[in-house]
Image (cartoon, rainbow, N blue to C red; front, side):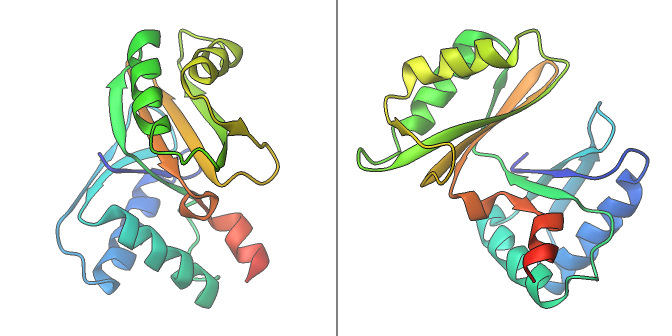
Length: 170
C-alpha cells in the first residue's frame, strides 16, 4: 500500500471507480485498490504514487466538480504493526529526512487504536527532534492507525490532498 483514499461510509465502491478512472486518464495501468476493514478507507498500490498525487492536485484544481466520492488522498511511506515501538521507529526513520532548518507537525487519524492521540504524539515527538509548527509546517508526519497496522507518511502539506479544500481554492 502506498496510498490511502478516504470516502464517505458506503461510497467506497464509487470512490474506487472514480479513482481508477482518474488513474487511467493519467496513464496508469497498474493499480490495486482494496477496501480496508474500516468504513470509508481504501488501500491503494499504484506506480509513482507521489507523481500521481501531484497530477491529482492539478486535476482537481482544473476540474473541481468531476470528483464526487474521493475525499482525501494520503501517500504512504511506511507500514508498521500498531505497536508503539514500531511506530516510534518508523517516525524516527522518516523524521531523519526532515532538514534541521525545517519545521514539521504530526497529524494523526486513528481507527481502532490501542493508544490515545496524546500517547502517539508524545512518543513520536520524543524521537523526532525538529522544530514544531502547527500552523504552517514545512513537512507533515501523517500517522494513519488502521487497527493492527499503521501507515506513516512524511510529506509537504500540499502532498496530502483534501478534495474539499482543493475545490474551495479552485
